[in-house]
Image (cartoon, rainbow, N blue to C red; front, side, top):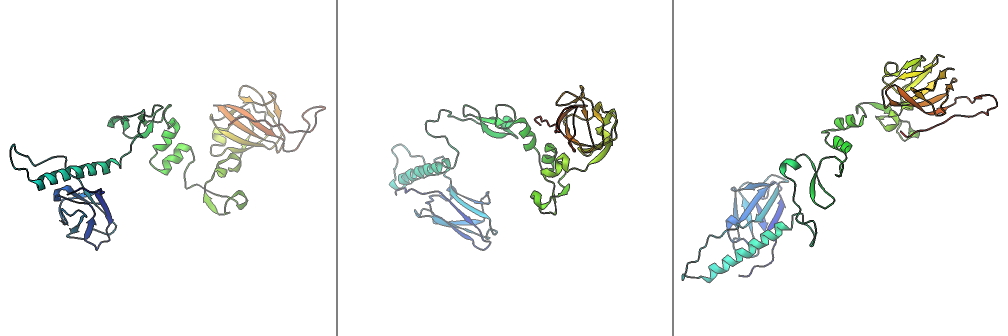
Length: 327
């Protein structure tokens, strides 16, 4: 018998009622058939019809598979031979023909499943590509190096995932990711106006609500050293009251603070307060500035804006002082 080109695999979705499922490839031995339900191989509970029929056959379950279960039927011929031809013995043509048929069917099986694997194009210079060992690839990401070889991406330089991205990707849930990004709790809410792209209703916290200018502003009294660690622990939007000259701030590194001044005082330029001009700034009511803590207790005045234009000195025009630094 000739061996025609066939695909040794069929799949069906059960409906909870049907018990008979067909296959359209030739099966020479019942032991060559593998039946699976949702990936679990079944060894009993069904019968096979159509063995030896070139166009295929069917299986019938004693109990109908549950609805939406994936029924897979595939031919898997073992790469072994049980027939042993004896020297000067009989050579039955039907037995020889069947042996040769099984060889070709086994090749069909191998070719089908080889086609399901990830492969390299012909002539690929990276071949063979070998995966890292189990110990090296566990809990990592599949990636390729500059030579096209498989590597386990650990989130360090020279691989696709940066160290910071790795700290985010290993978070097990949204709460962990928010903590890594410093966004706080999802339960925090804010009303975003319609003219700012919101609905006017209470919505989940957005980027606009975490900017200092959109946070609740608190009053902090002026002093030689203004303590923002205790005076503004929960906000980066402050209103400095009083007229005491300020020579330093107590503040953690990395904070960016939006400041409004309620009155006239002197912001002293020194090693702890770095102004854009290098000179002291005499404030007035309504003036605003942005402070960035470049180190613990060291701030830089990134921008300063006059609330009401005023002369900065004899002969000078009315103007605003502004400055910027990359955040």
